[in-house]
Length: 79
Image 1: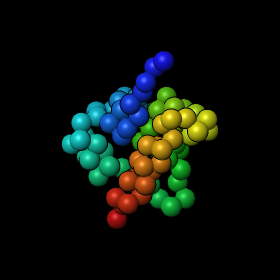
Image 2: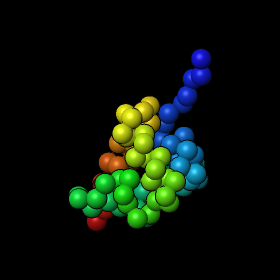
Image 3: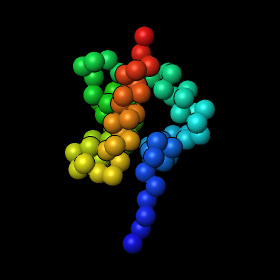
Image 4: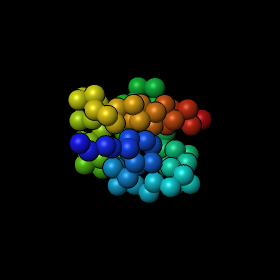
């Protein structure tokens, strides 16, 4: 049986992004979501990143909790 470590750092790795704490904080500081914008449809994702996010949320995958956390962080950080 495989055991996966699903956390914010590994979500960033899964998305092909730098995953150290400084890179995560920088990403959150530089990217924001409006109230009517879905995380997966944000303009800053590549098509493959968008597909991963949509599929993970649709399937309620193990990643869903951390995708929700990222969504919340991107909404809190906006001005």
